[in-house]
Amino acid sequence: MKKKHTISRRALFALMSAAMLPPITVNAQLRRADVIVIGAGVAGLAAARKLRQANISAIVLEARTRVGGRVWTDRSWGYALDLGASWIHGVTNNPLSKLARDWRIATMPTDYEYAVLYDTNGRALSETRQVAIGDQLDALLEAAAARGERRSRDVALQTTLDELLRAENLSPSERRVFDQALNATIEHEYAADAAQLSLWHYDSARVFGGEDVLFPQGYDQIVRGLARSLDVRLDHVVRAVDFSKPEIRVSSSRGVYSARSVVMTLPLGVLKRGGLRFTPELPRAKQDAIAQLGMGLLNKVYLRFPRRFWQDEAELIGYIAERKGEWAEWLNIAAYSDEPVLLGFNAASYARKLETMSDTQVVAAAMSVLRTIYGSRIPLPEDSLITRWAADPYALGSYSFVAVGASGDDYDALADPVDQRLFFAGEATHRDYPSTVHGALLSGERAADEIIATV
Ligand SMILES: Cc1cc2nc3c(=O)[nH]c(=O)nc-3n(C[C@H](O)[C@H](O)[C@H](O)COP(=O)(O)OP(=O)(O)OC[C@H]3O[C@@H](n4cnc5c(N)ncnc54)[C@H](O)[C@@H]3O)c2cc1C
Image (cartoon, rainbow, N blue to C red; front, top):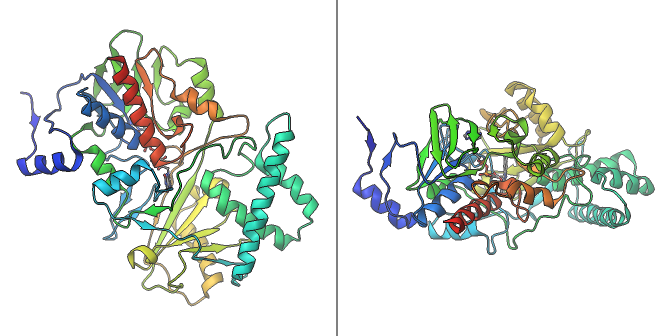
């Protein structure tokens, strides 16, 4: 007997008013739709939502037992903490701002001016000194870009910075200061070492203006809004896509699905690993783009303390480590939720190293920095939440970056539809706004528009 999952009338009303979509009755036995969307992250959900608004049926297949992908809110401590994306980067004209407004989701700005910075021994640097460090970084990045224009081939950003720094004759402590600024500003943002980033193209993406805001009650509210009324099948690991015949066959851990079009939103890390078999093979240009773009790593460590021992007013707490890249930046969660929680960020090489360590070792490393700053008498954390995005088989990294030898063209190549039947979305397919939630959203909507144009 076919089992139908129906929704209560009240829930239907809520869904319709919130998402402006007609109700849907999901027939879980049905394995065919106009479109199969692979992946229920923001890109996949945005694609399915737009298709549904155009009366095109879509089934979303998702490997995990939750939606959202790299947007993932944890509530195990009784309040929301985002383990994946935190911010809407730039609220002005950002499509996520409109969704947050329409769905009445509370946001709070981050004020990067409220920042403190500590040296290796735990001494606070003056504000004037902090401004001077920022100016030095900006000047060197500009000089590196200017040098890049005169080069005949691309090199790593770090290579050119090292050339410029040689002329600056910095002392070891001055060099540590510069390294912290580079790490916290550039390497955290691009989730890659400067030694991996393309000098020519690492910052070629566009940005929305306005402030950055985060969601004190969790980014997953956006995901839930997008997922409303959609036919999402969780716990479906897709293993193969056969588009050799007019009807595309998608093989998953729970059987074969078919459609005339497919939207593929798998993270770049998963595509790089080749965990999915395509028949026929993907075009050369797409395979090259997958190989050339980098998949970066940014990880988070939340520590919950019995009480707050750090300053109230600071939103960001910086630390100039002995070794580059270690615990360079902390976010004061108490500024957003009143909870005595600190969030440490680590990116690239050091984030990879931390993934090889146990939770106890990671917390010990974090605490040694916090004790240097705030003294040996600070309390031990009551609990920790530690992400390991590189080890996550359905992400295999945090977000894409432009590696040496790659360029924005690779994002376009990854986005190009194959045969007007196999469509691509996901943050790594958006040339203008890669590596972001809004890029993922826009890429999903673009893929839906491409399909709508074919019917
Ligand atoms: C720690 C961290 C911090 C970040 N901070 C920010 C931020 O502050 N602001 C911002 O804008 N962006 C941020 N990002 C980036 C942002 O989260 C991503 O760009 C965006 O969420 C990607 O969405 P997506 O739909 O392209 O991919 P995903 O969300 O990864 O969706 C792809 C989906 O495919 C599924 N999948 C994988 N393999 C299979 C398979 N074989 N079969 C079926 N399904 C599969 C995955 O489970 C996933 O649900 C951050 C990311 C991380 C990890």
